[in-house]
Amino acid sequence: MRCPFCHHSEDRVVDSRSSREGRAVRRRRECIRCGRRFTTYEYIEERPLQVRKRDGEVEPYDRRKLLRSVQLACVKRPVSAVDIDAMLEEIERILDHSDEAEVGSGKLGEMVMDRLKTRDHIAYVRFASVYRNFQDLTEFYDEIKDLDARRAEMEIRRYQRELPLPSLEDSLP
Image 1 (cartoon, helix red, strand yellow):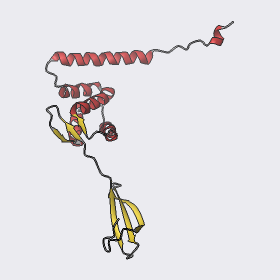
Image 2 (cartoon, one colour):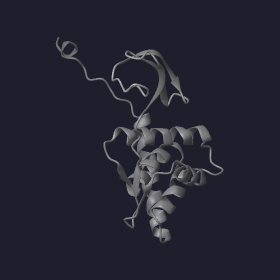
Image 3 (cartoon, one colour):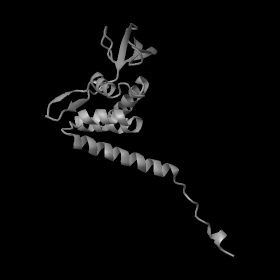
Image 4 (cartoon, rainbow, N blue to C red):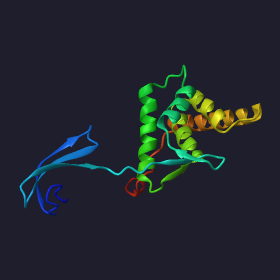
């Protein structure tokens, strides 16, 4: 860091503290040559996430837009605002950990549907019907049949007990 007064490149940090709601580090520095103090701020360089839409258009990721679409699917359903926020936080954390600067709207929609499917089937079908752009009742019916089959399979697994295998010692006389 160069001193803003004498342009010497050596200084010492006198004080460091978090600022701007934890998004920056404020450092008080003292120049080794002239002894004058100055303040610097360090920020995390944020990588803006881009969303590639179906038509090829690219736009910045907008949490509010995704939040509105999920809230609309969850109207009058037992999915709380806290659940929705946690779902979006999880999706954003996964996207932040990926090395990609761009995500397809298809992948984003699938991530939302995967989470809605485990929370509320009606909200899932509402979101899927808009996202997948169902054109007729058969598409709607097929999606509901698939969802019902998965639910039945989960119920079977839930009530199936796994029987322990007898050990070799138990089978020997």
